[in-house]
Length: 570
Image (tube, rainbow, N blue to C red; front, side, top):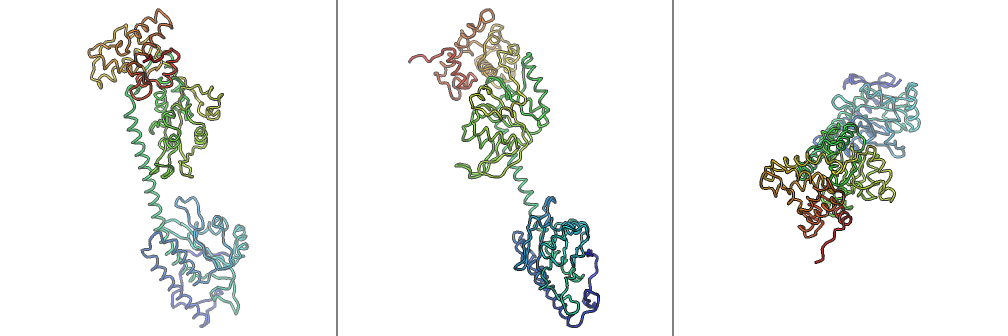
């Protein structure tokens, strides 16, 4: 039967009688040969010990390869293999192999599975397993027997590599041809290899030396992996901090909470309560300036992901050449100017929420890549072929008619249905007029200290005008008007007329309660013309008409066409 040689097996001392495999004493000639072989072995072991002392970790693998070849020559083995358990303990593979010319190589991926019975006993019993002949294998070792025959193995000795309390691998010595065996003889002929206790004891010395070298290497690899993880975490936190500092700088306190009691806004908040605790994608629909990002933050705040950040990306604010890098990140050298690797917004949002604003403006090519990420939960940085696993909830928003875009082929149907699992329509300000007084006072209270003002009163006519106005720029336009009114109001009463720029705008809005759409359009037209006049009819840019009105330039141009607003001839 196959033999397990435990760590406690006693070895024969130098003065002990040398025996043959059948228990008979060796002849003087045989003993002399065995003594010479033992001396050669211990000389080789001493050389190995000196080699591995203070050996740099990077050179360990090369020296192990040399060591197993040297030991194989001394003990007369035909093949030596070393398998190692991975650092996470989940797999084992062949890492070093030596064999004589003409001998078939063992596939590295299958090395462990080829001898499952032997491998299981080495790990279980933490001792050497010896198979001197094929018929010693038990019936349940059928796969091992098949491998013995397939690779012409006559006998095998497998010793565990033990580091601390764990078996981290195996060192295997095999005799195949019989031509290189040590003279363990019966009568005049060679026999199948008997791995006696002395030989196993010597092999243990080799495994101790190799195991110590591997322990240093594994400790170094574990340390490097930990340092790399720490560095990745540091860079991620650094990127998050940079992003969040920018968000704090660019985010208005006016949007710190949802303000409103109207049925329209209550219906939106009810939907937020319904969907927040789930992990499904949300699609926010509504005109520009209605506060869709605020609703996205409310969904995130009510979710299990609230401890992680909500990362926002405006898909319309970046050119197509940059949006892919912004979303998915890039490696150093991925394109001109990429001087260092950079994590994308998906990686920053890992474990949290990604808010994709103006999703309807995303280029078709990027729509496909976004869809693959949403389906597989993996991103690929620009310039890299490696996939990163991410766990991100996506909330998208748009002021466009995506269904119309589907029909025109400008938006992918599969992406639309992936994003619109739970759509929420965010109402325009004109559809929630009851909330306008609340919003006005909210903006006053949140901004007046910063602007050095103290407003205690709003004339009823002024508030009525604000409520009656159509607000094409929605809440954002109202916020800008209140900011401007606070700046212009030096006393305790808010001055709205001058903030709107043209008295007719207020008067037209005031008359709306008893008038009609015509008066309201006139007020809106007068207001837009007043802002354009103050901006020299410049529409686009910081501080220009669209910016002051809280509108996108394209939206303002559409309103101008609808209201027949044209620049006066010079």
